[in-house]
Image (cartoon, rainbow, N blue to C red; front, top):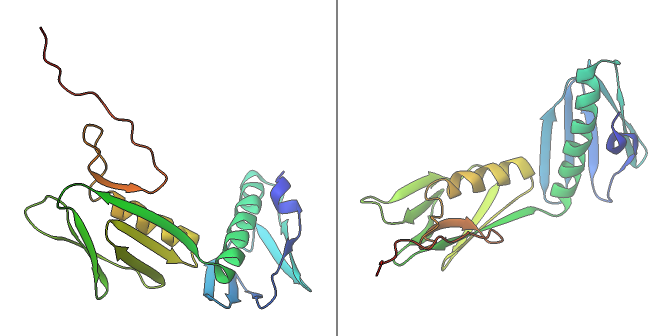
Length: 179
């Protein structure tokens, strides 16, 4: 049983939640998010300024999805009011990043510039060596940040690469001359 999903979810002011068939739609001041859900396993009911979730069946899948959908709904409600943000740091001599049109372009030690298309619904800013990714959809922000980081993961000897701003890289000593 999910303790998270048992609690009613409060809808913030200026936010609207609609359920039609097997689609959940949250509309707020910072955007609109939609997410499909399995209506045969979990029922979502909007009552006044709260949302209630109940498992439609008493099987393992329905109970698992009950808590998952509650977490997704909380993230959607939070995202349309105040966008999620991830910050990445580009570290290394000569390493640069810039936003050009709908692409994020890197110069990070390869023989060619690396371009990544920015998904629709995200705002990306590149200032000096910090990239900030903001958007209403928590999943999309996290997935794009992980994709950017995977272009050049930080290495443990010099610390060069792309890392999250709050990530700590454990440094290795490297080679040592023996006497």
